[in-house]
Image (cartoon, rainbow, N blue to C red; front, side, top):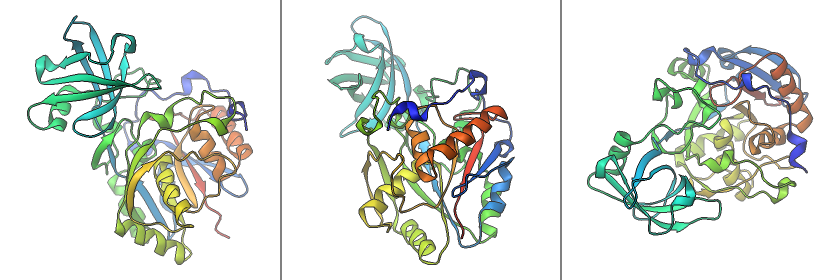
Length: 346
């Protein structure tokens, strides 16, 4: 399969630059997983789409204020760091701008010395490893000095950083938001529960590898970066019980999907409590074992995320849905509208 097979025309003006004032005001395209039939609605319709006995799976990760602006101690040159993944003993994998100015041994300082960092390694994809030193609690210093790492296609300033967090975010550690969850409010989640749908939370800390462009012609040759996930005993029990009772497992977002499928592929469809790292790459031909339906946003042309949603139904069905989304001027990407791939309930 070629990357070009997942291309489509996307006018730049359809890329949402700011969140809607009301989280639930976004549109909802409903796509039947089996037939490809498309319905156009608004997000509160999701309450009626989910049925008693279903299970809704949400990713409770919280985005770090992961963008840091510092200076080189030696020259005073300005350097931008984006924290991606925590290693051992205050060491982090990062992206750096401008990378060519940062070699092993380069020392940076942030916030007039509140935080310092030394480059300890260069990585394949142009990233750098940094070891941080500070006094106090790292995440408190990060809250003080860091900025929210909005995706590069968003050019507007975000007035309220909480709008790039889900209302249920809890476990800090992501470099990007699990954006399908941004449409939910506490009230909508309560209505879903009242209808007899079980809601469980799992964690996957989103790295930028999920959004990294596919730079090979053949998608089978693309390597995903690994991301940390965690699933509790309680969550695993509820999901397994739902499947055993004939209910549908609905993932909110590609991050929840990748977490559940990572585990289900190992245990023949069963979900077990565990934590670890996943670099699963889902594209057409993949045999889904965990999820039956998916709530997701509209993704970049030729991205791994378009491939993932195509694998749940078909490439033709998704590209047809995306053509309609463009025609009807749906809003795309992080602050955009939602799609629900409705499970087969026969």
